[in-house]
Length: 188
Image (cartoon, rainbow, N blue to C red; front, side, top):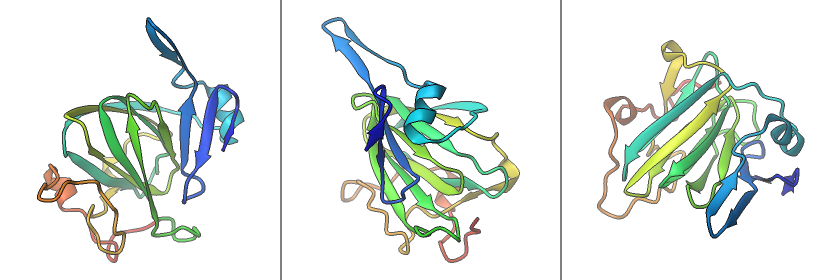
């Protein structure tokens, strides 16, 4: 763990996927947190990133979005939840990475204020655990639909341990339901 005093950074099994915990100041009135500060982020992580786009999604319980990535204009993402909770997953699809083919998952919630830094070159997705969730993320490049790809959420090679209750199927759109198997999906 490292930190600037204002944010705490924890590495994961994919060393450049980071869990970011901003300091939360609270009292009987409520709480305050600085959700992003470029100087503090750089000091705590050693990364100097420029975000160009903010995205905000709303989803219902057991919605699974992903596992998305772009072959061109690959995006780094700083993700967080402002209402509800999700199980957030990053998969390393960088062929030259020591963690190629590995995944990490972290629960992000409005209560725990955790964020996850997902560097460019990783596929990303999440499963909504609460009744509803609002998910926000900053990206380092613009959405490029022409080069978007999607990995199958349930690919046996990846064996992601999604916290779905037995007998519950995830709620997915057609694009995510048609995600590609690991063996045939394009990689970076």
